[in-house]
Length: 103
Image (cartoon, rainbow, N blue to C red; front, side, top):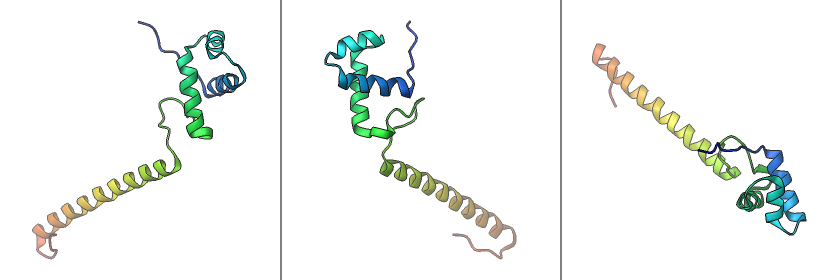
């Protein structure tokens, strides 16, 4: 079983830059000791995300809108959990002394 190689952001950016200046991608891939498919994938990722490409170590690549949506979804989930906890607390207190009402 072959170990998976990891490439840092600078290496990927340099490979993409070189790929635009060289005519033969296969030759560049051979020089860099990587598969040509990687260069093509890195080029398309760079074209789609530009400065946000290659965040590293399994971090999701998201546009600003996607990251805002993810943040809002997390915030909504947190608020729902807080609400549920408060509902349970009100239920517990209302049973014990009868002063509180349940939802």
